[in-house]
Length: 182
Image 1 (cartoon, helix red, strand yellow):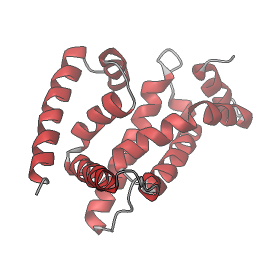
Image 2 (tube, rainbow, N blue to C red):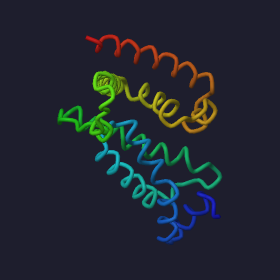
Image 3 (tube, rainbow, N blue to C red):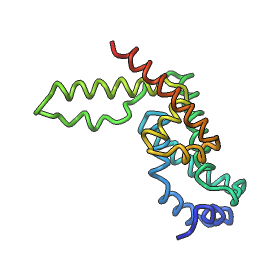
């Protein structure tokens, strides 16, 4: 199997099939990262597609001595930041991240279903109320299941910084959840 760096080098040489291989390899990762950062399925899909277009257009700037995933993640994160800034300016209405689980009604305990639905809605809103950096670190650790070392490598920051940022982001999230508990 060809490495990610080799695929980007093939893209740089004009091989469009290499881009297809890279997309197949990382499309789920790109979508899930974007979804965690922007909180909207449709926008996450658009952002993940745009990220691959950016890889294609920016292949000439890629340093094959560096790992692919941190470079790719930077592209996704920058696209998410831009999207969030535009959304803040336009204040457009958000579409829920994932309504599918709410369509399943648990006849055994409808009260627990309602409580779960309300808790998830509060959590989703609290995550969206966090700063981009706080949402990013929580998304990578809790929703992507990345280790401190993986996050440190991806964001190019020390492991201790990851731990510190995660600690303070969790505190802010807990505060927001308590504030929204009324």
